[in-house]
Length: 408
Image (cartoon, rainbow, N blue to C red; front, side, top):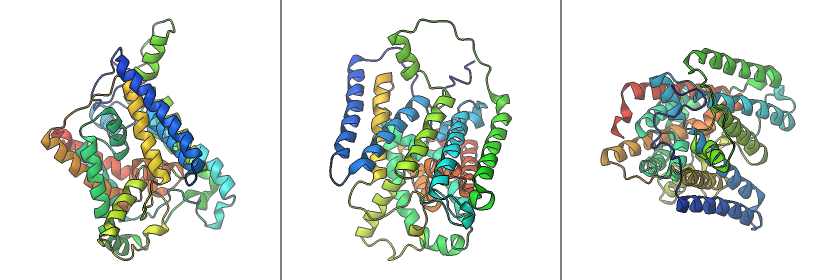
């Protein structure tokens, strides 16, 4: 039985190859070199600067971590629900723990006195409303139907997944649907909803203690679903062994989670909170705006932080992060021999498209997805992050019980 450090997701499309094709490895190295060169070029190009350059690099690191660690929220949740394998979930718990510690330090510099009632600037802190719970439930159902979350489809796009593209196209359509229904939901369910940020109530120290305590209780509760550690035989460290450990084997969930958590903190400190829907949502908003398909005013939407959308005519910082994520995943998949282009079935494409629409709608209403509202929100001590995370998990559970993924 595989142990906690090497469990593979039930949705991994192909087992890592023991050797990788020379051509694939060469292209993988070139793609990662191109990412570095692109970041240097952005840094020296007027109008882009250090923020875009750093976003591209952080996106690349995130793509590598997601691909090598199989950091897909749906895969992790499905392993827990269907197979009672809790190991992969520790990647999320570790990322939340690391980001919570880092956020507490950064918040202290940005806003020394949280008791003033102000919110940390630009952090994923949203209103807690029935609309948020509904958005999380719908988002979770979309994950189960499409086979991954939005960030999961982005890194699988780098692996050549045939279902990633229809799911992402569906997300763009869902963003538009969310924007079209926003005003009614805002007036009906969101306008009077409280925005609850724990540091306003119990300070940074108290918030961090509660944060780590809750994560610790969850981690302890899941210990019974951890497979026993397998004895590792002694071996000689060679280049082939390092390639196998670093690229071909699934990364230790604790390592993957720590890397994701550190990236989340650095992103907030130097650029903006980590998220993967702002540029995509802005693309949908821009198209609808240009064709006069949106109301003249989206009530309250632009007043909230998170994965905010806007009418844009260029690539935003978030767009560079997404580009880096896909490129990093592409390079890692090629180096590990996991780049396997696939042609999707018609029924699977329709399921992925429909699931993407559900996720896009949920992401607009929740002001972000599993990376933004869940990961960055919980890390920022926002109650909205926990509400979204719990309802997303419930949506995935329902979707798995209904076997929605059978269409893939």
